[in-house]
Amino acid sequence: MRYILSLDQGTTSSRAIAFNAQGRIAHVAQRAFEQHFPADGWVEHNAEEIWTSQLAVAREVVNRVGVDAIAAIGVTNQRETTIVWDRATGEPICPAIVWQDRRTAPFCEQLIADGHAEWITERTGLVVDAYFSGTKLRWILDHVDGARTRAERGELAFGTVDTWLIYNLTGGAVHATDASNASRTLLYDIERGEFTDELLELLNIPAAVLPQVRDSSGDFGVTERALFGAPVPITGVAGDQQAALFGQCCWSPGMAKNTYGTGCFMLSHTGAQRVLSRNRLLTTVAWQIDGRREFALEGSVFMGGATVQWLRDSLGLIEDAADIEALAQQVPDPDGVLMVPAFTGLGAPHWDPYARGTLLGLSRGTTSAHIARAALEGIAMQCADVMDAIVRDADRPLSELRVDGGASRNALMMQHQADVLGTTVVRAGVTETTALGAAYLAGLAIGFWSNRDVIAKQWDAAAAYQPKINDAARDRLRRRWADGVARAGGWQTAP
Image (cartoon, rainbow, N blue to C red; front, side, top):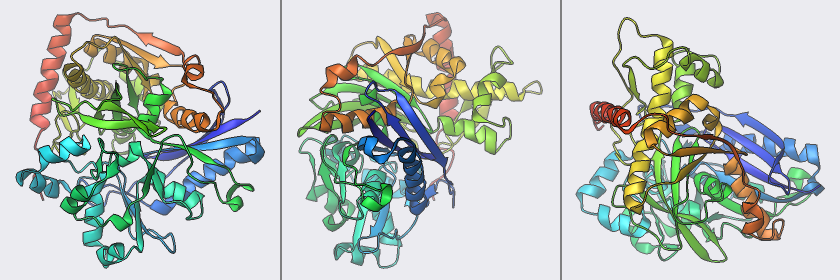
């Protein structure tokens, strides 16, 4: 038996999964790591802990199956999270700034005020927002002593998490990323397919720190022998959401998926031509294979599963994240309670970094069950806002939404998602489609799977949810939600 080992480095944990030739999970290992919140709107990780946790779970799976059984490695990662390290020692010069972090919002506002927003969007497909890596990288170079001078001398390396893992896996031999991750930096021209001097100059980023951009399915070097006992080729890399789109086999224009993880990320494939959004969505590289880029429209919800974690860790309403569904089912509805989970601002299509989490409609009769149900509905409502924008951009209705990620197993929330969208929601048979997509990209590069048609035949559905409410009820829910979003907006003032 031969496997593709997928390294799935997420926002709250690192996983390693061995997939067999049928695209099924053979072995899995997972390890959580610590989140750091040093100031309001700031989110950091220890980059060394990202690496050590990912290596630990990779070794666990390799030890189970034997290194000779691993045909190749695919890497998928939390995107936009920004790491800068010393090229000579491999030591990070500061904590990793996580994609959720909002510290660069004032600089983004200045870029917008100076009239650069439209120009940046035309080239990168992104909106000017603290979400993306470029402004985080600039912040590090400006605030870590000596960093800018060292970067200009070529002593420092920048990377998103994929690049950081590849650098460590190869013993520093490879400093590279793929086109899907590069397209999330605010430094990459998605039409030309390269980092450009104009964007680097605008953000004051020296080119010397940048990784090489490669195909998503192709050569990223081999692992150091000492890590697993033998070198293993790394042949697939993609940002987590693009990897999930690939793993869901959404390869034709109009096909869409939503991943329910720490955040929620909805992507709709648009083909070989980029489509610039008219509704404040992102245009992103889905993947690049044989030098040819495919594109997607994307909307990001910053607080998905992280909302449930807050209920567990900060409020103590549940002991385990999986308990949220049973608690919410104790009541038939939220009884007027509405939650807008804008704990780190609102993503697409609102793009409000100063929105904050809001809980409305509380009464003396409100219970933990009402709050739990309002939280699940709030997550689904955020996703519905994104889908509305995708439908308007595509100018066609959505026939179905393919869903994956841990929270897609929550039947209560998936039913509410179908209700507020007014369309069928289909949960994939393999919900770990992020890791699966990275495995598919790696396997295609070495002939483990001969082509996409072979892969498409492996996709199946585990459950489907049909809308159960009428248009009038749906409209009432959507109007009430819009009122809640308006009340949550702009709550936190700029620093």
